Image 1 (spheres, rainbow, N blue to C red):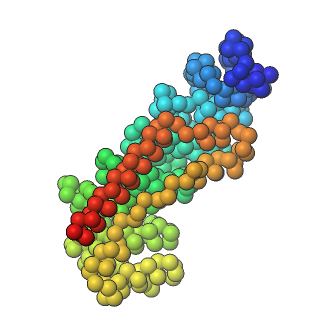
Image 2: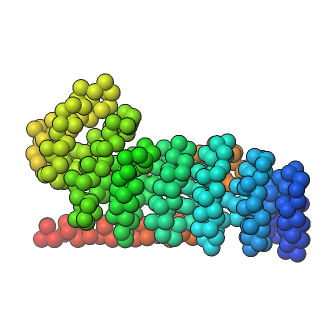
Image 3: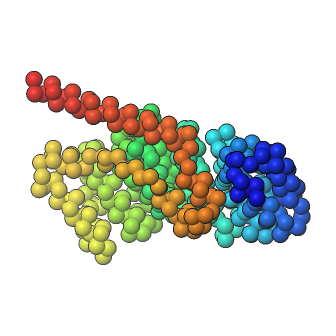
Length: 351
């Protein structure tokens, strides 16, 4: 009744219900705990209930370790719903730490929700990049393509500050060991191909070193990752003359690959310098433009497909956070400034 009443309901009744639910989620009986967690997640969506729910955060975290997987799922839902800017880092860090111990049945759901929370409440996007790298390190097999694609989109769309350079340097270090997850190699290949030039002057991070670190994983990668590496090699060869004699044999050998995508990319990049002028090649291999910002990310769409539109987690994910609104405003301001600068440059050329 209180949930149906919504924000218009008496605050005293809502607070009383929250205290009772707090007792429910503390009992040993799993069925009662399940109902308490589920109802508290619905109650937490009501405006003004956030502070009351946060008081039970420690108890909900304990329920993540319950023997019953249905209770663990409801605890994960409630943590997702109660998360906000104030407690996001603690909740995300707790979930990441628990991920290493979680069983396979809940790992994919945990990874998806951690990725959404990290993006939604990141006041510093470097923390978001670090969090996704932790997910890949702990449970890389459950980090789907939309999750690492989203990292690429966010890094590409936020040139302000040092995010792009930080991401490039962090990923280069992450894939330096010979053993690392293939998803990390894919993210690193794209980011280094686009923004590796930002760190090329740093010690041990030259273009040649970037190629060496990436290429040590070549023989352990599948066709999709190798195709991505081919494009990165072409970009490195375009930027650094010392990389060209290293990249040329790889392209020549890959032209005979049984994988059509690798064969085509290698042939086109190898022939590019003969067919076009150096200026045209430079334009063709320039960094990619920003991605289009969609109202709903692929991760939110995936969450809706898994849980349905009526889920408390889906409702929470669809509501923009203050951090997201601030980033959108900064991106819009940067875009306007770039348009004004381009217009001014055109006027100066006409004069």
